[in-house]
Image 1 (cartoon, one colour):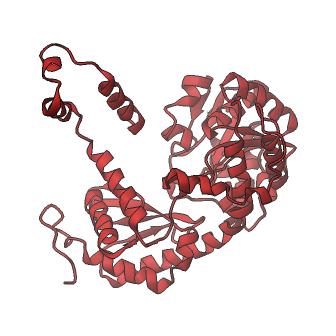
Image 2 (spheres, rainbow, N blue to C red):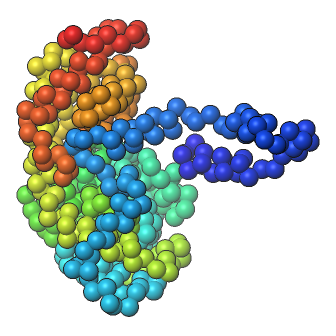
Length: 431
């Protein structure tokens, strides 16, 4: 059950009236006691998430401090100075006019496409894009990776909502190769490529490999759609500007909050005729929001303030990754892996030979006891006594030197239980 669903259940339970003997006791201390007795106990995941946010907010040093975890006041401050980026005396937007249209034009210019359409969510944008392509190709079959976002995080939206049929060209933890695309045993109308493939470790092919994959799909008369939620981050790895990367695809989706720290929102970019049809489907899917100026202005701010800094984050992520690898090796851990060894973006995975709960508790303790939170993201089980986390390097991480990272690793390892005693009481290492 999702957190939102649990919150809804608690809200519903709190609204229920009391009957019979319970109503008779509902006065003074008795009512308070009854309320406490009936109140659901928070689930472990909820408690862990609350603690993680508290530690992150309280830590003096982090590699990345996600803006979306800020207070409302802090989030509203995102719009401070936006009058330097857009004329606030212009009329407000109504159903996609004004600043929303200006944002669409800006995105189309950055990606070198004929047009772009603003969407409230990437889930909606990609369903609409692939539904439009299905009408043009005559095929509802979409080839994508089983770890791609629509397959793992959207409750089968492609098939349940849009009548699309997902197929998987490869199960390897990487994007498909050109040979695999050519050899796939059944036809498909569209090939969807998530760049980077987040759940495989934020991995990317080389630019040459990507171009070959696109060519292979076109040889099969299929269109290519880029799931570019984090496409903004790929220029360093590909060694190409955004326009040249986007030019490979028939359509591209980009997000305004994953890399750019906006309030939300997405854009679909591509040929003018596709975008116009997409806007019609956007209306049918409920995406014609009456006013969206806060989200659009935050996106404009993100493109101006954060986009130019992303290459710097990527380059520094490689410094952090190397320091983590060296730090854990010096600490004598039996096995550690940074994946990819040289990060493709400013996010990457770190794997350690411990249970996920052990690593979670150790990360919390380090943050609470030292004010330095080395690992802010959740740890996930990858196998018996094996877990991984995603490491993100953003503006806050630029202040960390390689020696800072190694020192933080030493502090982290000192709080780990001895390997082989993972089920027993925690025994600090090196003390």
